[in-house]
Every structure is written in C-alpha cells, then in structure tokens.
Image (cartoon, rainbow, N blue to C red; front, side):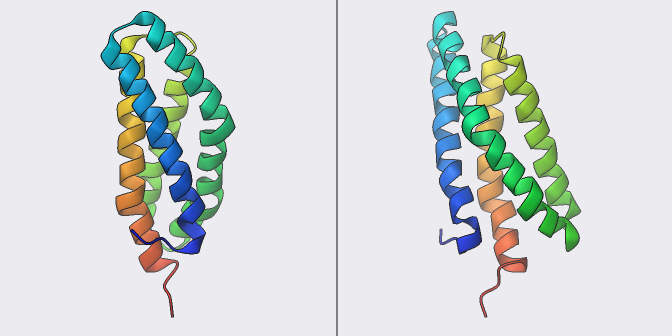
Length: 130
C-alpha cells in the first residue's frame, strides 16, 4: 500500500508494533509464566522507547488535523485505543497471561485499524495529491 510521505514513518513504526504484538502473542501461546514475564519486560521497554512517542506524534499531528475536519469518530476510536494500550502497558508491570493476551490482540488490531481505516481516510482527506 503506497503511503503519502507524511504517513511513511508512522507505517514503519507500525511494523515494529506488529513485531511487539507477535512477541506478546508467542509468550501467551507458550503458556510459560517466565516467557510472559520476559515478554512483558520487553513490551514495557519498547512501549516507552517507541510506542509512546508514536502515539504522541499521531495525537498531536494526524489526529488533531483529522479532528479539525470533522473526523471525530475515527479520532475518538484511536484515542480510546491509545489509552487502553497505555493502561495495559502499565498493568504489565505485574504481568499475567490474560493481560498479555489483551495487549497482543489490541495492539495488533489497532495497527490494522490505523493502516486500513485511519491512514486511508487521512490520505483521502488531508494528503490529496494535486
């Protein structure tokens, strides 16, 4: 899927997010409390070093621009998912299988939503090529 230059870095970061979701899913599927604990430590580290900045950039740029043109439903869904992912990440300081599974599923689904719906809308409405 060809992305406008304004969205390319976000899409690259989504690839990293999907790798993180896959790591979390593998830990859950292993059933090993130790694997879940190790994956949670990696998730928490990567969340702070990568995902938090990614969320902030989207919120301050892309989402603000979409809200300004009336795309409140897409913007609110994105903000709600960011908030849920942040809360799950905080909960992973004391990880268990259910928390890790929720995080893995939500992160995967969130990235797919942004790529398929949010970014497609942004390209059509904000970044039209003339």
